[in-house]
Length: 125
Length: 125
Image 1: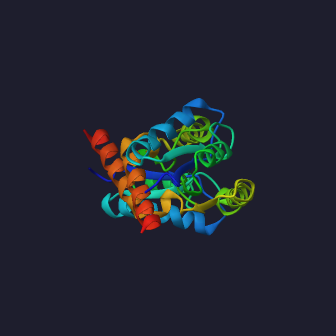
Image 2: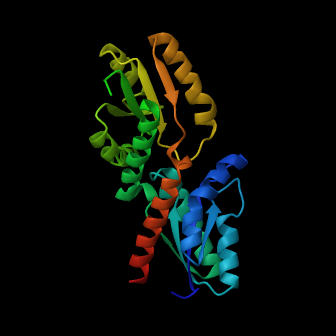
């Protein structure tokens, strides 16, 4: 893999700093393991998707894959993000692929089961 | 564990059936592994939290633990859900514990990394 491809973990964003910190912790294992990756927010927090794409372009990245840190696809992922992507592609001359939201992957269901099992062990103990 | 304790996986809910189906798939491994568990929605979809708690009470369940299928805590989990819980506890004479949202658990960050690794393998392949 060259640096011409970048993974962007996209979260919704919030004006509540604690909300963003949770997503930064969720993103940390990915950012640690995947060399050319970043977190970005749709709105209400920085770095924005626009910031990350324009910074990437400046350093020679032409292809991006957005992995949405959303459990399911609602209006944001069906309409708003595709519209943002089209605008960024035209503006920066880059190619941006939108992956499925993380909750579409069966691994998440298994992780949820494990979290519940831990919760249950703590409740019953 | 007796049936006097129930795990409730709480999702926000949506009028979009596809959104709810994603959450039902996410909940499936838990519902399969944890005998007395259910999914419920805050709003816009059934079964509601009220429905699940009142059904549980009818069959003798007095203690519930809500595990929020949310990646981070925003207004809903800090204000709306605690208010719903207080009302349900008073109305039904039950005890309802609100666990952290699933995204607070480090396992989720690891699962996200694995999902991104899969995505990357598919992109590069």
